[in-house]
Structures are given as C-alpha cells and as structure tokens.
Amino acid sequence: MSKLLHRLLSRLALRGQHSVLHAGVMSLIATGVFMMSTAAEMGAMGPLIIALSFYVVFAAIAIEVILGLFTLMRKLAGIGLRRYP
Image 1: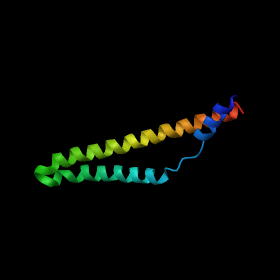
Image 2: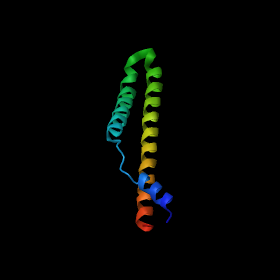
Image 3: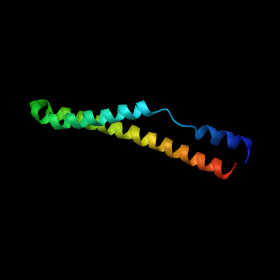
Image 4: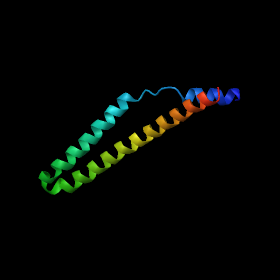
C-alpha cells in the first residue's frame, strides 16, 4: 500500500472527540419533544411553537446522522488499515 494511502487511512481511523456534541444533540431532541408536548396549551402561538420544535428535532437528527457517517468512515478506515498494513 502506498505511503500516502496509509497516512490518509491512519488519520481517518483516529477516534473522534464528539461526546459533548452527542449530549447536546440528545438534549436538543428532548427539548423539541417537550416543546411539541406543551405547545397545545400555548393558544394561538401553539402552531408556531410546534413548527419550531420540528425544526429543532430535524436539525438534531441531521447532526446525529452526520456524526454517524463520520463514525462509519472511521470504522472503514480502520478496516482498511488492518487489511492493508
């Protein structure tokens, strides 16, 4: 395997530092669900609050999907390093 490919796979296989981001995303999802459950009691502002909570939950899930893709890329790079030393 070429030296450049080995260096690239080595950098991709490093462990991520995103545990604080995961905790923040989980709290965003919980906040969005809480906003949805309490929006019915807000009167005329209820539909606006529900729409805002959908956006919050959608953004949090999108962030988790992106972090999942980074994790998958890191796992595949680790497999590539083990297969082609």
